Image (cartoon, rainbow, N blue to C red; front, side):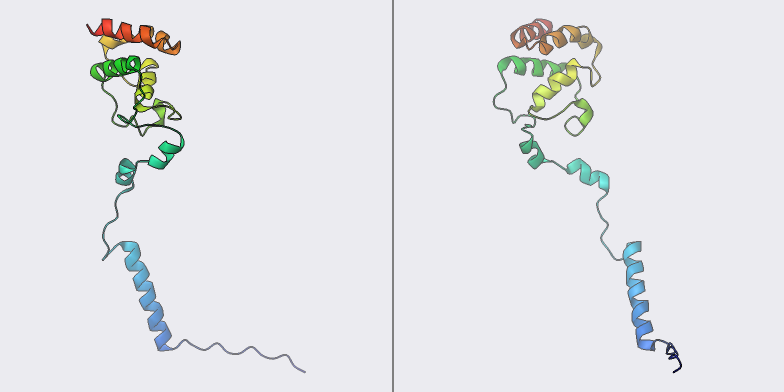
Length: 151
């Protein structure tokens, strides 16, 4: 017996061709963005993003949320805020130190001591002494030195 010959391919109906062209034009419109509301840019979404669930998970408290900040650390924090310009991206940028188990205020103190953001000249001479005291966790002496420097 001879092998069966393959069936001839028939041309698609005009109706099927029309449906395919409509689908293709809808895809092209979606890609080109015509008729759609413009999406927010990636940078604007990043600037407004606040990882509150992540902060809770790693025990990080944002600025002003820390209720248990000792008065010595509060004194040092106030000195740094008054004498330096805190970068706008301080909370979002990882280069200023880790967030795990720390508050915004403590992270700012550490960033100041380790020169992770620009420091004005009048605070530069005082920074090594404050760094030594903070590294040794001598908070009372550090607060006293800050108070003496501010006067």
